[in-house]
Length: 72
Length: 365
Image (tube, rainbow over all chains, first blue to last red; front, side, top):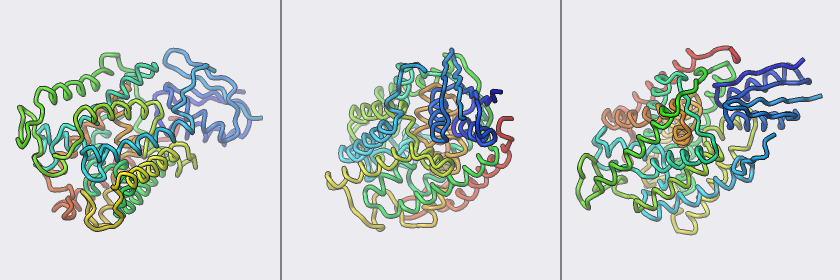
């Protein structure tokens, strides 16, 4: 099952903190993160890579970014 | 994944931006800006408050074009790369007060985080206490974030509202062009100018604007932030932003050595005082305020150029805070701390802690 983090409307460091908290809770699996600005997208991507999660998809639609992170 | 890649946001990019700012800032000093104050967001916003007559400290009145350039440079970058995004509504009054507190703390130390680094790079040992205070304040801020601190989500605003800050800045720039400085005159039209002191020392107008635009542009692209550098290091052990911070320090130090502006010591440093405890405490308050508000004063300017109305509120909080700091005798001077500087630090710290404690929510709520 894909877990979700909705960090839209929030700015650093909260999207990263929320993503990291969820990752530590899940340990492995698939995580979908929603952010609404480029900076948060960059920060979450950087933190995910740092934690050994793979960024499998990154969509950008209108004002919204959806990142799909995976660790097996 | 979109093919578009932002080179400025890479490790090399952030270091490059730190190096460019680190070279330009000491050069601005060489071209006329005050000692170890090539760029100081707090001091320059304070000078703007003075030029507008919000405070009447005669030695610190000048409509610093660098600040205006920072906002417009970031605005241009945000437009060019489709990152201009009008947004607002995340506890604006709390952010205004945090801006005031940040400025009061910064003026007890006499500098923003950028100037703390530039002071160290110029040999001013007192800056070590300021930087330690900054790191401590940001560290306290990270405890709040770990505990679930949040000022709440922003919401989208219409395009016109996002343009307000760039328009205000263009308005100030036009005001500066209509009423330029008249040599040895303390006033030109509605604007005040210093005839002596740090406010009278400045690089030529065009140079200041061009450097401001360049720094604003590259800082917006790279997300350069001195508070974020310390925060991410403390909170996540991430070195990304901190590498830019170190690059700025190294480049400014080398540039100062090359142009003969490196004078190591604690006494008689330009626009500085040697009261270590208050240098530490002032920056602790400023660091906490920047952390809770999500950006150092430079970053707040860049975000305001991207359409972030809350960052614009913080900027004006700083400008009003500067007026209070000088009108109420909270600001320090080379002679030492102001007559009410201690009260200023205590009240500003209490305000930051109040805002911190009253906004702890569960993350994700």
